[in-house]
Length: 185
Image 1 (tube, rainbow, N blue to C red):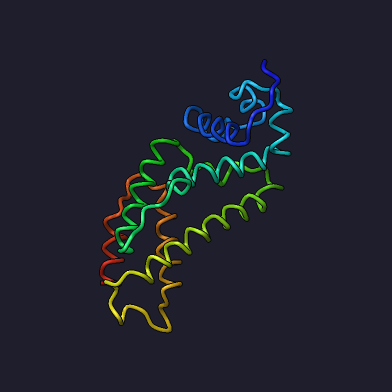
Image 2 (cartoon, rainbow, N blue to C red):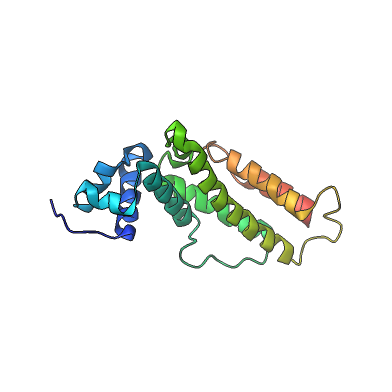
């Protein structure tokens, strides 16, 4: 085994390969070290615990699914962005089988709070991006929002529906996109 150091990026790439080939449950310090061809201690130099490694791996997969690391497409229309998100999710599901159903179950009970917090931070960024797109969408009717239904609340609802549909392999985006179009345009 090569005992030379590796990089954090190489470790994350190894995690992604393992998830693609064997699933998220196969990611652990030993499997990642073997994939990187380094000693287990080299992995601990970058990630002090399996939980830290899993958090980084899961976050990197979400970023890969939504192409966040490489310049997100700029959207003018909220519905187009949502459609793109669905397509990205379908492709992500093919690329990382069982990821959507397994990532929340990957942490030991004591690490669930920390793992959930990291994912909430990521999803907050996603929500803020969607909200920005919604607010810039010049096609939205003037009376689409009021004090009861604000753009923030609308975005929350849409994301709840969107994420709840991730584990339903039969669902497609047509129904949610129709709701969005009827509410906004």
